[in-house]
Length: 344
Image 1 (spheres, rainbow, N blue to C red):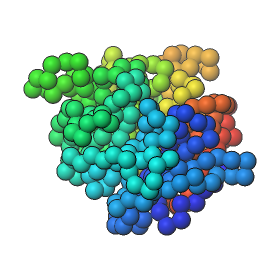
Image 2: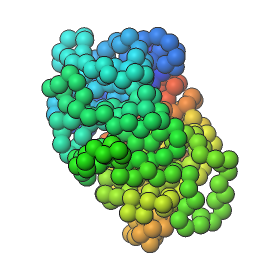
Image 3: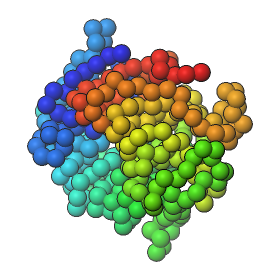
Image 4: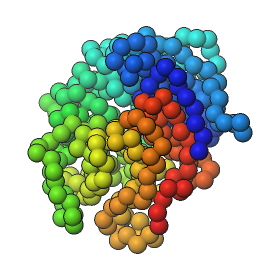
């Protein structure tokens, strides 16, 4: 397990480069993001451990970041001051571009993996905006009318956008549709609806809908997503059957802050929680591992080396299938192999 300390700054997000297996980026803020500056780190994994290649100071906390899919040295950040900034590791100390339309904190950013000249941002102001690096104004604004904690482009369709928000709904937008009264929205799924199949031993402890903080698309099944949030439960959904979750994965003791499906295995996902653990799960869909294509999910292992809220997780796209990075408010970034903690 490799470790890097972000002394004086509490990380919110960690992302592997889509171009290099040895490059990471981490964003965070001083004083847990409540007040003070932010900092963006570009890190390299070397034979002598993790070294900081470069860092950038920002005026406010960085809640999220994403690597450009166009340029190997560029990073996009989501700022607590409502701004988006594009940094180039090879150019100076300041951003090479910036955008400011959101009225409140920007909480997530995501680069389009299919149409690689667009990216999106979501904000506490209740909107999602679609951008291109070449223009100062946003291309499209999608009103959600609730604080949007996470938004993503589908990795399978360049015009499909999903969001999760304070009102506990998973929304699906299709930019190919006409901008009618629904503003491109095609689905709004209540996340806390009962699961389609009764889960043995699972009792819904929630007294009602709670905030959904994170979601992620499955990289292999183009209609499957996972969500998680304040109630500590991970839920998987199939957009072909949108009335409720297909699978429910309880286990975390506190809110789940980030989830990420594996880029290598179709049934495996990783989570980071305020209970200070990062856990690896299967949704039970892998027939080769004894699933029936829609089986019961379970926890496969956990990493509990963090000593504060675990905030970010990401998988390495290259090489062996288990390497990941996690970050937490203990001012540490850890790079480790999921296979070391997995149970059979």
